[in-house]
Amino acid sequence: MEKRALGIYVHIPFCVRKCEYCDFVSMVGTPDEQAYYIRVLKKDIRGFEALSNLYQVQTVFFGGGTPSVLEVAQLERIMEQLREQYEFAEDAEISIECNPGTLTEEKLAKYRAMGFNRLSLGLQSVHDEELAVLGRIHSYNDFLTSYRLARKAGFTNINVDLISALPGQSVDSWRETLEKVAELNPEHISAYSLSIEEGTPFYEKYSGAQGRALLPKEKDERAMYHYTKEFLETKGYHRYEVSNYAKDGKECRHNLVYWTGGEYVGFGLGASSYLGGKRFSNPKEKQAYWEYARNAYNTYRTLPSQSEKNAMEEFMFLGLRMSRGISTKEFEERFHVPFQQVYGDPVRKMVMQGMLEEDGDILRFTDRGVDVSNHLLVEFLL
Image 1 (cartoon, rainbow, N blue to C red):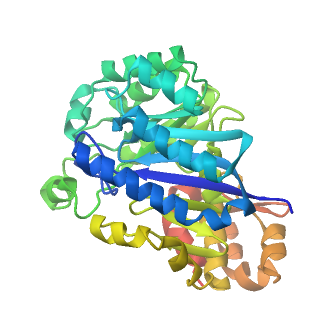
Image 2 (image 1 turned 180 degrees about the vertical axis):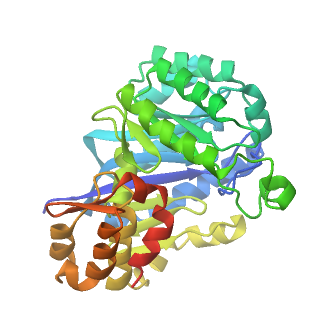
């Protein structure tokens, strides 16, 4: 029996310090807390051993938090558990998120020996004053040191994370960030617009009228977004998803699993999965996760499969995030119903408005549509 493709996400919630804008499941952990978490995480992974013969692992992504704050030996134990349990494709993409200031030459050499072949470095800005506003622990020079060490260690697939629309940021300072990063020629650039999330220190500072006045105006935020696409195209990067740009063939394969409806399993605090037609997430609170991990697989087995309505909605939401768009033919093959019968009305309206464009059986947002995509996607709720 041919094995199915699988993506694996491993969540490492620990950071040196939690950034003020961050609403991810992350925390500062003591060495004892980190050691205990690794033991629970391995239990979580072992719980799904019954499914391992059905899948071949195509992608692995260690995210956080800051996975690179862990001791190398701790990461090795997790990787050993995964490789013992699953068959890995020869060309599997294996990524790890790292923060500048947490890497050494020795660490990077051991990451390579473990099988990591893609790094994602969280820079955010080349301006130290903007990094300080975000609460980042590193400077731009720290990033440059980490980037050069990664190249020296043999990493040929590096992503750099950036954030625009920061408090006090100008269009010119964003341009300088993009230009300096592009000079380094990473294979991939993720350029996100700052989101002020409830429950974060940034929400307290910037959600009110006075705080919002410190953020870039909407016209400047849009100018940053458009400049990103236009400039990066001149440097050989194509936008393949709303916020992601890559050199040819260097798209993040793990993220494509999410956006194309592929199967993936998430291990760790708050990690999400889409497996066997079921969508589920681990608890975000530590004590609840400790309890859950003991019986995660049996809990998964009792879950109902995703409804067809939800599956159709996700097909549209996730697929239209990508520049290549969605295939109406694929929709009909997957759901056995005419596409026009389900989504004909909103599609016709958006095509007439110049928000969507049709290319054979492919449907994608225009540049105008991408600008307001969050509002347009509501039209695909059933």
